Image (cartoon, rainbow, N blue to C red; front, side, top):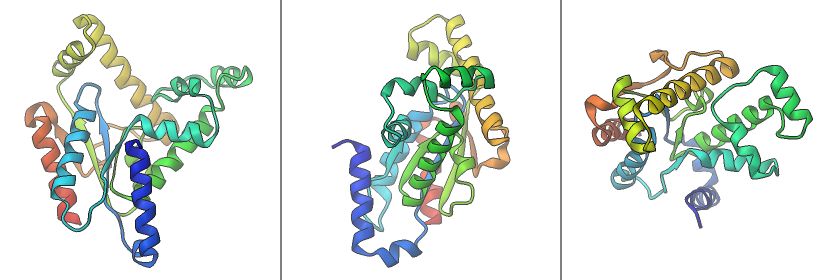
Length: 228
């Protein structure tokens, strides 16, 4: 049983045990927006460990969701896994999207973004989820219980990190980081009309290079536990 399946089984069991209580309770969740190379997944995993260790009220599997969100959309729409590359945080022209849809490469990008957003909303409402990227903080802005975070780091540090992680040259790492940042910015702008670098979208904006991934996770976790 994978982490996602364990999470769903646990949440479903809680709802069956006391449906009235669970309808009244706002459940905690976290969304993470991140610059490329700012240790987004590392912080999310450390945060998950911190919350599992320090959450005293009840036992619940805090779970990190990154690519698992896309897998759920693919399964829900009964699409082949070959669609997954078309669900990245990037944009294409309307003509290109239409041509790819007509040739059966994937459903409309707007449908994929809509279904992804619905899945993110469901996870936030279930609670105890750490959701990475895909405008999750914007999508869930009106869902009570959330702590919304933006992770940043100096460009040169992020390039060094990705160079080491990807085992590529510094030039290749720079191109990768700048392209990924641009794709994520354009994705949020096109489909949600927001600037993902706007600090007012978040409860916390943290320079991970200055603070460190472990302390970043502790800061976020402390805010989550303080609120709940």
